[in-house]
Amino acid sequence: MNKKVKLHPDNFELECTTVWAFPRRGNWATHKSDWRGNWSPEVARNLILRYSDEGDILLDPMVGGGTTAIEAKILNRNIICSDVNDSALERTKESLKFDVENKSWQKVVKRDARDLGKAENDSVDFILTHPPYADIIKYSNGEIEEDLSNIHNLEIFANEIEKVAKELFRVLKPGKFCAILIGDTRRNKMYQPLAYRVMEKFLNVGFQLKEDIIKRQYNCKATGFWVKKSKESNFLLIMHEHLFIFQK
Image (tube, rainbow, N blue to C red; front, top):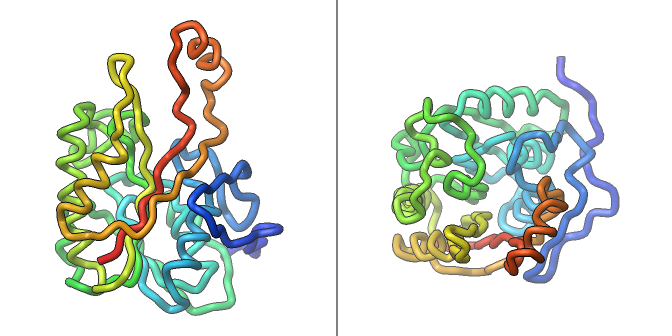
């Protein structure tokens, strides 16, 4: 039996600028913040409301902890949720066990985002996803061959993301939108603009860039320790991510 839960956040307002900040992590529906690296439910809600309509078919090809699926169900959007990680898929299925007063459907399947072979061309109304940032957070320990979070080399990672972008371009309907949240990192004390490498790959396959939204990061667990290191070693902490909105 499904749960009856609170379905909407308090005092929600649609974002209208290119800088977004959400200190809360979602206290409605079945949202949980213990899946490392999951995006804020308010990011997913803003995107769904801005770039899709009720009854549309959405796709999150790296669904992780299920945040996107929960918001799509609440907001009366149909969604295909996929991932290569069985734990993510099981968690998503569990998170969808609550009641809503609409007829939206949710399909949870195991697929590699680089090969959505069963999905038809031009069949999806909106794509939104939060991929791993190379191996900054690992979601498996190498046992899942298709897991992008096991890739350390940023060039290899970006090339694999281009394969994802090509598939997403294929399945998205012309004129529709694809939203990707991605962050940067440091290697050998130098800033690595991973987000812009990913952006370039999406542009390479034919997408156009509609928006570049700066999302402020909250709740970074190591912040206290790294504040001290930042001052001692003279580097700045990365506290933002890029939310790219592409259009086909």
